[in-house]
Image 1 (cartoon, helix red, strand yellow):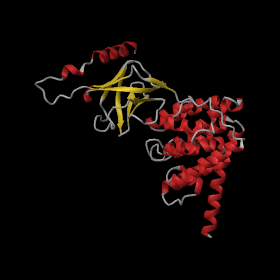
Image 2 (cartoon, helix red, strand yellow; image 1 turned 120 degrees about the vertical axis):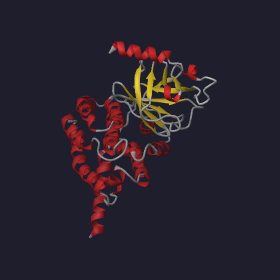
Image 3 (cartoon, one colour; image 1 turned 90 degrees about the vertical axis):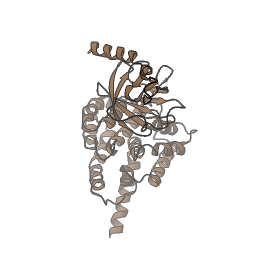
Image 4 (tube, one colour; image 1 turned 60 degrees about the vertical axis):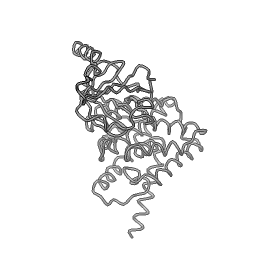
Length: 342
């Protein structure tokens, strides 16, 4: 293994796309050099090979030889623990440059895609960390509860897919998938609330298991909810020894469940188990812990993450911090629906 990685690193250093740009070959693509502004702390900066897994306008996912994910991000996108955010002046879309299946060469200094004549320089990038354990959120505080209620109100008003409409205002279960998700949540969340209150790691793992991979999309709603829930636990772990102990005991069980979902979602779950989260979610956590920060704007920014990923993570965060803020809303909405049907 060591020999192969050393050879890969040497190949990376030796790759010189400039040499392929010849005057007699007009179709040759000139080398595009791009700088990196931030590199997530979970990006392994060792020589090796990878493959482009998927490409979108704002992000490109690279699967490493070891099965981890590295995500390239356009300037201005929210940082990720496994992300590399390009600096200003870089292309505003990856879709025109890259395609799935292309080979990627990596080293401590650069990421290179030979087929696309693309080189991303990492040497001047700042390391970005998505840790949130230092942010204390006191759920007994009246002010904190008001701020949590504000997040819930924004979710109720703006989130129209995923878990939020089911849990917060009892959206009509008109589709089979939504109906299935609603039933799964009704079975799991009360059990999860009881296990969380008792700091019962085994009970928490059992309640979370049916949510892994639940829902459609690149990151299913169930996985996004779990990420938000884990963010809530990490916020409380530094000043609550019971929560810290249950989180440590829960980690191996959750790690064992991650193969049940897809590669992209798996990486977010692994990050969360290790206490690392996306910048947009971290921003909301910071605003909940610090009243002087603009909570509404940060919540709105988080909601723009993915189709429903931001909303589902925020619902998980609310549930983890104050389960009754989600369960009571769900129960009230169900009662209203029942009355309307009668």
